[in-house]
Image (cartoon, rainbow, N blue to C red):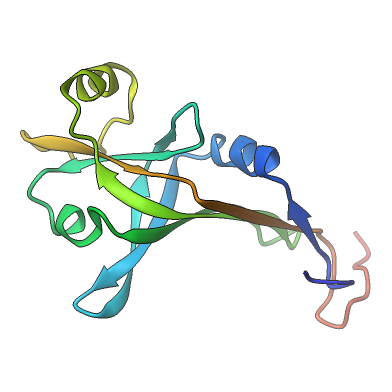
Amino acid sequence: MYPNDGFRELDRQECLRLMASVPVGRIVHTRQALPAVLPVNFTLDDNGGVLLRTAAASQLVRAIDGVVVAFETDELDAAAQSGWSVVVTGRAGVVDDPAVHAHLCRVGPRSWAPSPDEVFVRIAPELITGRELVGGRTMYGGRLAL
């Protein structure tokens, strides 16, 4: 995909492993016909689904329930000019099964901005892509002396 430019594509398992190592990502959706990006804390379920916990009456829930969204997370080291980025694309939906909701209340993500009436949103992973930037490259492709 990115030949000889310092990037390496990541496979699905590596993407999920890296995603599980960070607490915050960004959900990309449409708000009033315009692109919107919102940082959120999250966890992954056993099938690689992204789980968010938010206020039931939030604008986010109204904007994403039942639609395809993207979710991105990364870890970057500016000094080393290296890092990785993973994008999950899939349909978002409010978890409406009472048993699953009760289970997620015990083991799911904790909201960083708690609300009295919270719901869980799951992004079903239809596509997971990732890439890693190999550190120490200049903009001309040469290696930096470290």
